Length: 457
Image 1 (cartoon, helix red, strand yellow):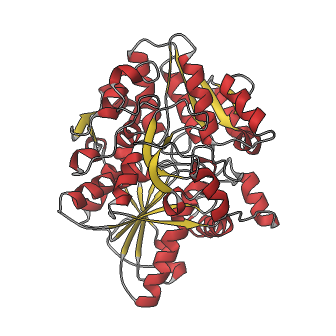
Image 2 (spheres, one colour):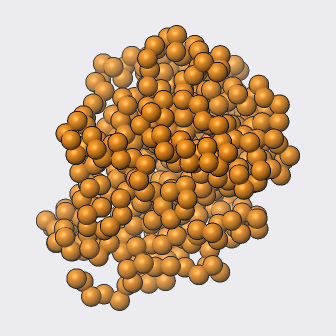
């Protein structure tokens, strides 16, 4: 065991918790492209978004210049139930790998929802309550966001309607029951409840669904229900803003021991965890104060960064949402029913897409069986059963640590452990039984979806 003067877990005091969210866009010289009205192809205005999103969240979404947004006291008080979250030195993992690398992970699974999603869920529920709404609608992939939002809505006495991607709904019945315990209604998507759901089912009979499908249903439900608004757990600027508490805490903890990471790794689906983790580090990079190697890890079955195109596309399969410029596989793309449900989105955050396009970060994709191999190894060595989404980051962190073993370099690696995998045992069972496959879309398949991208003059 390495005998270093760094504790296994670095905890911050409550007084060291962030008092403001950091807006990464404020330090970007080249800002993310604006959301466009799908009818006029002109930048969306606040009044056009008002029927879908909460007013104060719209202001956060469209603000590219304000560096810090003060966290309301009510939200900070809620955060104290589970924050600050620990930054853990993975001494056992380092020893098992025999690597000279120093490995740290920011653990976001120490709350009832089991993931980082609660950081934004409580903020969005707070603003919905402040606006006097009856409730909110949303989609969820793996179920972590739906669980977090149902918990937040329960706290503020708001109704919560969740459309859960069908394959996850069927794979994770207990995640669904946690949502219902907090009072949410949960519907498998696509469903017959909405016009867009019926249309998708007619065009794709027997589909296992996608986040894009579920988004379409949730938005339709919000705009056709009086006193409701739609909220989203990833992709949008406002979500990355709220999730910056992850990176801010991580950097404060590292600074206490004068630790500077060389490599920062996060799983990438829509961008909430990755964007939150890297925010202050990328800010330093943009300002020329420091440099870091930042790696986004996505599933090979849904490779928006590594095999998508940087173009304007619909944020949802039903094509009812604004157009966003992002790395996308095409809004009609429905990925295979892999077990990292939270990463099964056809596009990527506009902010992260622009940073990637500028070459400020890297991206890689990994196969599902390789991910679960890393997840099992991590569970046996570090004692935490990780979520499949988080395990994408674990896979690449292990790979980078093994490279250090080969070269003898003592690099410092930080990755995000976004949540626990205790509701993912069907996936672990399939891995252990040898029934898990590694479906990867062909170039010909992806070209079909790319050909349907909207043409923006």
